Length: 175
Image (cartoon, rainbow, N blue to C red; front, side, top):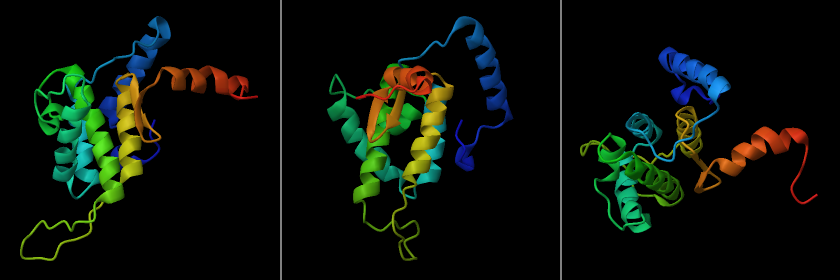
């Protein structure tokens, strides 16, 4: 679970996770290879809090969403996809594109953010570590098999195996 209270799970989510843990203890973990609408909505809420320029993230994500997808198409834009429109499979691409866009803008965005035209703008703000940590916690809690780690959106497969089996056994790759 995420130790940062940025978007800490509320009691209803904690109860859901507890029930899921009991079920998984009996039946095993069932990983998803898509992104359900409730995950997209949670990520969209976090995005609005993690930056003062969410529209810039969505705009860059839309370009990535089209260029990086297998079809070169986006049924709906990334903001509407995270909001629940489109398919769960397409939503996973939209979420990945949003993650890449967020990190990219954190490194390159220098244009002032002006919310009120009568006031001076402010520097763009991207709380990248907190955003990534919160999103990864949500993905794990929903048993989505993907995570954003070290600048890439990757499947958990090997990282889960490493964290749960290899690391506790004390084996270090390359030794």
